[in-house]
Image: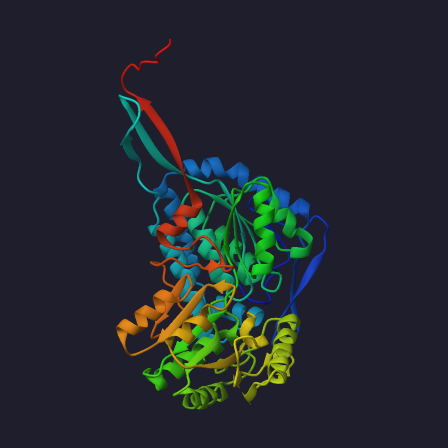
Length: 492
């Protein structure tokens, strides 16, 4: 096990290709900032298209031998990766706080989910070989086997960089594929270079995991449209995901996409408001609302609306705002970058101008955007109809279940949703009618379980992560037929 200290002050100046630490071909670098202080704490390579080519070539060269490596041996390497990860919690929490503005409790949650990603990978198996008799030719058996797809390209986002990289990387390599990973520009360490160091320490063979750091504007099209990968795994916005899918399609690579969301949180007239408001606060303000499955709209029955608004305001105002890298008591950190902040402030101002009432928050100081609650909202206001991806809670009243469903489904997205309702049969009916890939009853929508399919419908993506569903993305069936007796070819 490596004893190297993995901290913000460590050397992050090289990317990882074919088991070697390399500078970018151009020699250029990208500064990495602490979003709480805006201080640059390190620089990482600015990869070029030539670097992307080198990484994919390394993965292609390594893949046949990795596929032929017995599964038990591959699992030893993945188990080593899990050991390295488990030994590094303090380092990882410090990196997440500095690079991603992550409070300590949120770092613990991401760490637990990331280790779960690797544990899940160790439990994955491609379906066993099936033998089926031919339906058209006597004496023929059809053998269906499942093989790794080959090389997998992974692009991860900045909001949960460690987890959302490992949930694709770990199962891909466990199933016999090789990987090229491009982390988000805002979080190149926790989303990429850290993982490379852990893989190196785990002894994973050269070329099996490769990491390139660079701007999407410079290398994104080459990365997603490259002829080598067979799957492109992307987590991010729907707008960018559409381009990723188009680029991947040009090379006939499978796009596995988890995209944007606009999660409705339906609170009925019989809901336990104390529990619902606590859940609603968590679902809107966890990680400053920068979660694809966070609550985007609170849909609350008109009979309990005012009481719910008051409770949510109290929860929002109880959060401790500050720099997570300097104070472990902080429960609410900065948003990730200026673009995110500016969009949020604009959405809030436009929503108030459209007639909403600002109950609390609404201001920004640096990259700290206050937890914000807006009442008197409608579904077409900017904070409601857009995926605002921040600590903003627009609250919309409804009069009956039919209106709640109409409001919930009035969006192009369909990733996650939740329903708070004491009547179990009514709650299930509401959940069944909401157009989303994931719906949670008597809970908020920020949930992930490695034994359940994770993904969305409509404009929220293609494919699913976890368990047998990710196996389907990362393996492909092959038909081998065996003619067991002489066949009559009629005219010959």
